[in-house]
Amino acid sequence: MIERDLRALRRALAAKEISSVELTELYLQRIARHNPQLNAYISVDPESSLAQARAADQRLASGEGGPLTGIPIAHKDIFCSRGWLTTCGSKMLGNFVSPYDAAVIARFAAAGAVLLGKTNMDEFAMGSSNETSFYGPVKNPWDASCVPGGSSGGSAAAVVARLAPAATGTDTGGSIRQPAALCNLTGMKPTYGVVSRYGMIAFASSLDQAGPLARSAADCALLLNTMAGFDERDSTSLDRPPEDYSRELDRGAADRPLAGLKIGLPEQFFGEGCAPEVMQLVDTAIGEYRRLGAETVAVSLPNMDLSVAAYYVIAPAEASSNLARFDGVRYGYRAAQYEDLNDLYGKSRAQGFGAEVKRRILIGTYVLSHGYYDAYYLQAQRIRRLIANDFAEAFRQCDVIVGPTSPSTAFKLGEKAADPVQMYLSDIYTIAVNLAGLPAISLPCGFAGGLPAGLQLIGDYFTEARLLDVAHRYQQASSWHLQCPAGFA
Image (cartoon, rainbow, N blue to C red):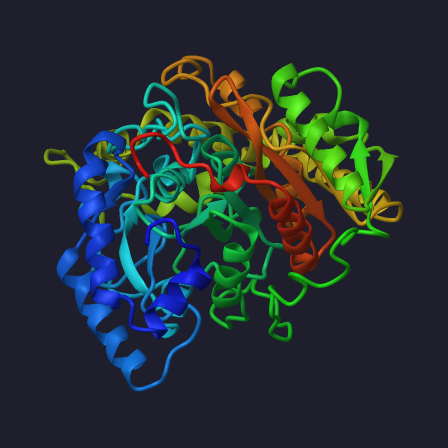
């Protein structure tokens, strides 16, 4: 049962091969057995999950429900969930039980899905390795000495180890796609504004976007169908007609299903900086796309090399503003001893935040300060516009842009912890997408040294259905996405 995709699980539930309660119990048992090794989950509440499963069984028995009714889903611990501990991987929110549901959580609940647990993450989504969590690092199921990627590493580890059929994540600079690549999953960042950010604890408001993590593009399409939609409570939510993101799957000719598709290959993705073994796998995947009928064309993203520098001005600036609310007064961590209000603020924030969060708050406060705003923040925003213009020009020549997701396979725990710049460069291929607000997906394309690598597909605005179809065609012709780490099958 744990090897079945979401559609197969739905058929099994409908045919009464298994009940939602039994399916939920199966995954809860696997979490109890494997989570001490992986540290993928922060919170699990079997009583609450089984109550939701019983309610789902009642809906199914009455002939109601949809594609996800009765299916357990893990959620990144950045989404507020009523009655659940919602920590953002931080000591600062270590005692915060949310009084309301985030829009994403509410949408899954309305669909009848079961909240299986809250997954571990880099603190306040700041990190690329899931090592900054107050609750300890997540281990990569393919090699426990390696990172799973971040910041959605807990969700990625849970799904690939079969501790959940699928999960949610958030992507600010690659935090869905990079762990998907390092864990052999399919992960999608939708167009900015397609999924509501209401109740998703903010890191960088103009960059954060929720998305799905699953074992296939077809599963991601089902998840996105539930997640996406306009929300008047979120000022950045886009009021667009509902879409069926699975509508293009399995359409077209069987022998050359991608005939007519133009794939852009940016020179900036195929130069120095990517491990040769990863680039070889990417090249092989591109060859498979040509066999499926796609045509490749050379394109250029001349300002992409500036994306990391621009991102690490804009994102910390927004973080310094968003995290100002955590002051030890209203909710969250409060220092046990303090002399006055200023001392309370200082000690609560010093003790409640980890080193990486403090680093980004300091950077953000600096670049927004008088005398430096124009020199840094304003310049970064101008570069952001140039990057978006580069993508717009590239999409005049192609339908989809393809390249590596991450410059390497999973690195060792602690390997880059002492060098923030090297850690930041882990997102060199993903950050530009967030700066431009575009949709992108990472899918498995092979293994190097026993560790998975990811292929990234980038689309123009609101082309999620096309991206999912292009990824799905590759997965129909390959089996990389079906591989499971030893000991978890």
